[in-house]
Every structure is written in C-alpha cells, then in structure tokens.
Image 1 (spheres, rainbow over the protein chains, first blue to last red):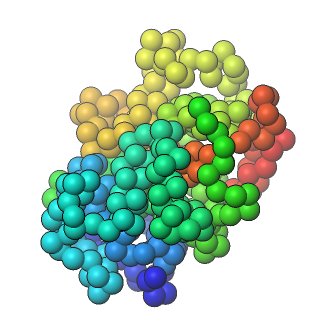
Image 2 (cartoon, chains in turn brown, yellow):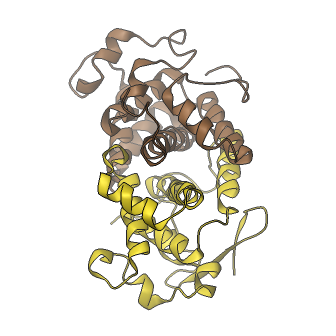
Length: 165
Length: 166
C-alpha cells in the first residue's frame, strides 16, 4: 500500500492536476474534496495496479498528457516501464500479473460500459484482492476516471491550451 | 439481468475513501448556478446511460418543484427527437460526451454550450455529470437497489449536500 500522502501537496504532476486546480480556483471546497478523494484512492489500492489503470484510462480516453508522467511513488512501488509499454496489449502480454489483469479487465469494461461488468470480472478481482479490496478498487478507479473526464471536458470548454499536449 | 449483489451487505470502500467521495459529492450538489430542471434531466440521462436502478427510481424534489414531471422525464431517452427545449438538449449532449469520449467534444457542441450556458453553469453541469456518475460504483457491484422496490422515490439534499429520501 502507498504511504500516507499530504492532501495539500500530493500531485500526479499531470495536466489534469493543473486544469482541475485552475478551473476550481474559485471553488476551494470542491477542489479540496476532489483532492481528498484522489489522495484516499492512492492510499487504499496497490499503487502499481492503480497506475496501470490510470494509464489505460488515459489511452482509451485520448488523454495524452497523462501518459507522459508517472504518479509519485509508483516507480518505487515497482512500476516497470517495460510493462507500461506493453499496456495496450495487456490481454496477451506475459508481463502482467493475474491481479493486474483482473483489474485492467474491470477497468476497461467499467470505463466503457459499467452495466455490462460481469460476475466473472468482479470475482477475479475479489480472488486477488478480497472483497474489501474489490470495494476499494472500484471506488478508487472512479476517482481516477472522473478526474480525467473532467480535465478533458474543462480543457476544451475553458480553452486550456494543454489539452492535447 | 442478474442483480445479485457482488459484495456482502455492509462492505464499502475504506472509510477514508468512502468519506472523501461522499464529501466530494456533497460539495458539488450544493452548487446552485444551474437550474434544477437541467440538473434533473442530466441526472436521469446518467442513470439511463449506466443503467443504475437506484438512480432511475429517484426523482429530485427540486426538479419536481421546478416543473419536471413524468411526461418530461420520458423524453430523456430520445431527447434529440423530442420537443425538449434546445438548452436541455445541449446539456444532454454534453452529458453524453462526458460519459463517453470527452476528448471528442465537437466545435458545434462547444459553441452550443457557450450559447446556452454561462461559464458558472457549465462548470456546475460538468461537475453534476461526474457527481451522478458515482452510480458506476453501485452498478458495478450490483448494490444499486431501489429504495422502495417498484416505486419512484423523491430525493432531496440538505444544506450540507447530504441526500435523504422523502
């Protein structure tokens, strides 16, 4: 598990952080609550698994700015760049563990069509993480997804030049 | 469709994350730049998009008081060919884009959004869509039960943004 993070300073260092901070500058309570959820997400889920999912979401949403950075602590936690490079082919690559596969499979399905997540997909995560781990992962993943969707929408709505950087 | 719970009753995300997510939702729901009709229609669009049984069975008191009735809510599924006002159609188009591919917002939609909504309303609209999208958690875990099975339930929020059923 990741170590405790400071909600006031924790940042993935991405354009997502910048866009959210700028857009919510006049709404500090919302910014703080979103940041608190983000911090909590990284505290309760295996950071390597969550980082792989963050990157996969970025691939699938076309959030290219997210692809060039790594969340602090994930490399130290074991994130391997060779594995990251194989992320688009995770279903057939041997670089991924059973836990990572289970979480990536759920991540993709949930991102695209959550109502068709299958029992097999959630059971695969429970088998790896336990029932509590499943509950933690599903909520943490939502936070990661929400931030990227907000960033992409806001960058276009409010003319942020970093949208496609 | 199998709606058997995928986690036992009482199991929720870790308290720190659960509390933070509740706080995030509450902080968004107290915003009041956007009219309650648009808010309610977008909520129902998200409910349908993710097939959330809980959300589909709810109607907000604020929406009802502002004139949302079942005739209007029935138009959300096929809003493009409905007689809903253009402002509401634009909001629903935006919700669809946010819930699918937000990077692919068309210039036309962007123009429509700025034509019909102020920046403050757009900010709230986007936050609303994501707030309602919390439903992805109960849908994935099959905990999206109807508060009163087979019936609509009225949904309200207190001043701190905490929800309650009427």
